Length: 310
Image (cartoon, rainbow, N blue to C red; front, side):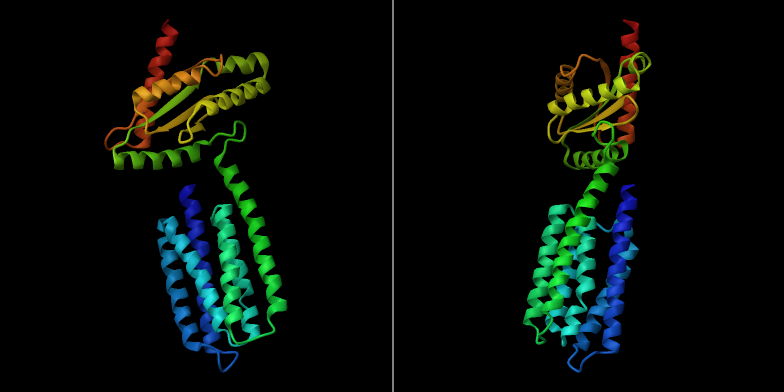
């Protein structure tokens, strides 16, 4: 899922660059005014076409910082084009590109970042337009600026809600399995690189099925919400709680060794009277997330068996 999201992000960015490059080449081939900066348009066309091709080739391999650099560069290019525009029509014609850049930023960046980028974009392009030779564009330019800012806010809020829905378990509000695995994999990679400890735990509720059978699924859902709320209050900010199955939860505990993990798990046990069994694994050299989960699951099975034997 994460790779698919990054592929879509890169593809949209590549389309923006390629379309922009093609339009710049068309404008250079058929200038609207004798003062049209044809050499600049040719250069920007080459940058857009080559840059778009490279971005499309990289796809999901394009790092997040590369996306951010490409977005900022796009804003600089639009400001430069506004500054070198030979006619008022040429300035106003940049409006769709400004709105498209703002919408893309709102789609891929967190809302505060999207707002900051939209402010930078409209400010830079407006300064460029004001510093250019043509006049009479203000009446058309103001609606463009307002539209870009308004659509950034709307798209940013919608995208934030969609990302939250895609990453969150709808019943309990904790991370779902996909988002938990993606974030925990990043924590594990950092732990293996730096040598800091990392622990993961599987929490399996004891006799949860009896609650559903005796009191109904509504009661079972309420129990899950109560448990996760209690756990969340005792967890640290860096800890990541996720729902892995119907009555099975997982914890990622960064910078935590086995002793620290058991101390934290003991605190969780005081949050609710309902019992659960824990399987624990700590990171080892060359580990993978699947290997850690397998060890934690084996540990859980042994503890479950021991509990049934007592």
